[in-house]
Length: 292
Image 1 (cartoon, rainbow, N blue to C red):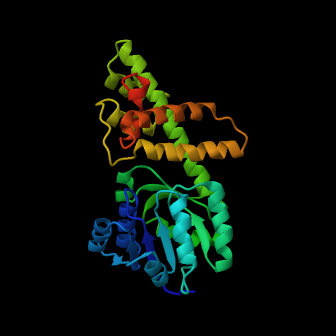
Image 2: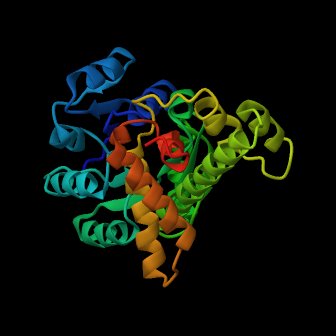
Image 3: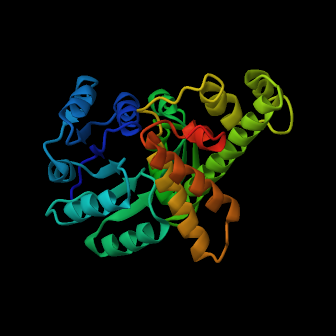
């Protein structure tokens, strides 16, 4: 078992790059980073991270490895590589949004190899990852949570002990489910309001003053649906579909129909089919209002 106090970080994408940069800047510990995209790795090395040559190189040099990866498929692959090392990390902290059942199964699989898996998925937007103001829900409690909380606090302002492994993913997945349903509802309200003769910006400004207020309304919907701008390289429709599929799978496991979530999934899939899979997911309003 590697007894170094060094930290590892694998996955420097939209969220991971900012998260790793904050860990480098605030943890006071060496951070060995790796991503197959050379430019992404180069950016964090410039900020003070140590260059990892591969996943295996990161694992062999560190005690705790953070993951920020697209899905549980990549998490399982990276974890298998780390578990196969002679000198392997003690903790893997998965900050991706991952399938609950497979997360728990992976934790059980890694434990005999001397590795503890902790799920710590993040919520809020890319700017929050850069600013270190994420919401992080952690599948760990007690002494384990107490040990890693100062490290997670480098990346988030709200770090919540969710209980046993997998619980962090449950909360994150349900957070995103509510967000997507809210955006669908706001798209319907905007479409109805505009057709009834109300200015869209005025509608959203006024809803934000009443009981319909939400962060989704004030920030995401107002910034996208009012100007009708849905940039790529934000949180694309295809990512929203992936996350909502996790929620629907979880609902099915718990024998819940989740009719509203299913209807929103239909809208998101139609948005992707209309060629907007890479657009910021509030582009679903184009399906709701009949433009595509």
